[in-house]
Image (cartoon, rainbow, N blue to C red; front, side, top):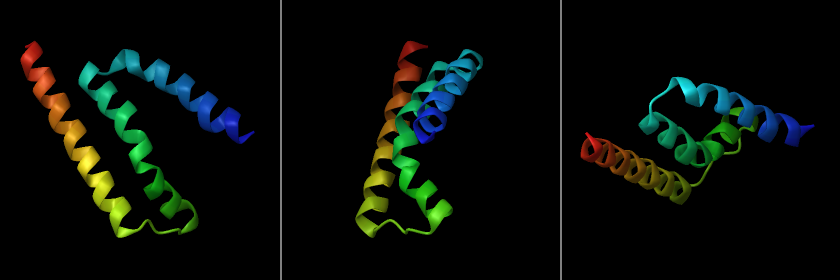
Length: 76
């Protein structure tokens, strides 16, 4: 059941929604979503991520955001 809901339903909803958003938004959502998994776990069951996980996640989010913005400006 978890596989159907967690992967199947989310993939269906993402494929429907991707038609309505920009390419930059789609890239950001697809790449950043796994980084936020520890935060969702914290909200759901209270398991706090460590400092290294938070720092690493912040670096990834910042790098993906900057790279996506730079690529979007180059295409324009």
